[in-house]
Length: 381
Image (tube, rainbow, N blue to C red; front, top):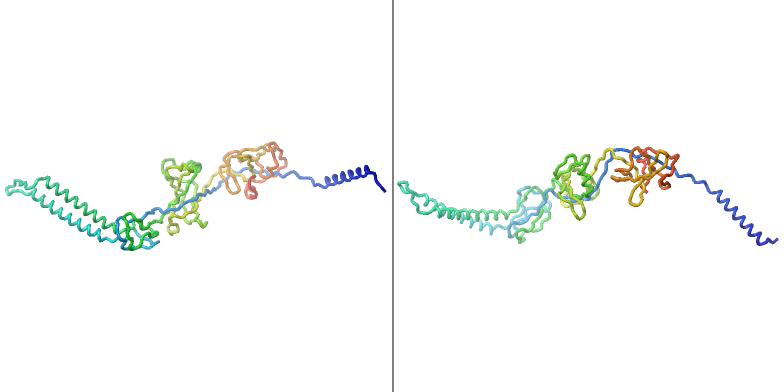
């Protein structure tokens, strides 16, 4: 049985139409997106601001030779603790000792000359009248020569004493740069000495953060010591551990900014009774600050357009409108808000991607802000 071409075409079109209808009927109905709404919350928040730092000894000096000569004795070892006044090095003193003895003899001769001249000047006749054997100018000249000789003697003695290189304070000896028997010259560096009882930890603070700290200080004035109220300063070492001693809440601020990077150096002082910290170490300073009555929202309630960040605010008619927000601080899953919303506003927590200005959100789910903050899963869009 043969069918005409026209009939075949009609049957094919009918079959395609029925298939399209069946596919349309099989598609499930899409439910409208679920909108979850919450409110900002006012609470005390502790923020942590990290800064890369360098650790320095409170006293760290280079120990130098003050005289030329041979290094006769090395009386310390690397890493040794020494006390103030302890002799660390001895330079061969033969030449300086001979010079001192010669200058001491010249000073003695000058004294004898002045003494004899002075006695002649003061000598008197038996009747009490003065007998001027020498003039007062000769006495003054002899006295000046004596003073010059005494000064040279004292200088030679000081040079002799400089052959003993002593510790200027209690500290730890660093690397030894010269060994026994070395020929050294004046100002050669023999070693360095570090007092590690108190460590000075330096870190750079951006200008905006500096102004923020200065605005919160309890006392106004020109002091370089800055107290950070409701704050705690900690030091994290290179292996990730936190140093057991903290610096309290006070730092020292240097006098000027670095014009190249816009930073100003701060210094925190850490006690180091166990001697764990050494000069030249690095780490990270953590400044923990407690912000009272801060307005907080979840990060995932926000979205970004160009360089601004927004939230959708639900009005009295259950319609949403985007509000620009200013972020004061950013934490792991939350934003601390400077301006843009208040605790009385309702903001869209989930579903903001499918909304637009003026969209209705009838039948939204309201979630308490404590629950919204406790269940952070998504980042901001």
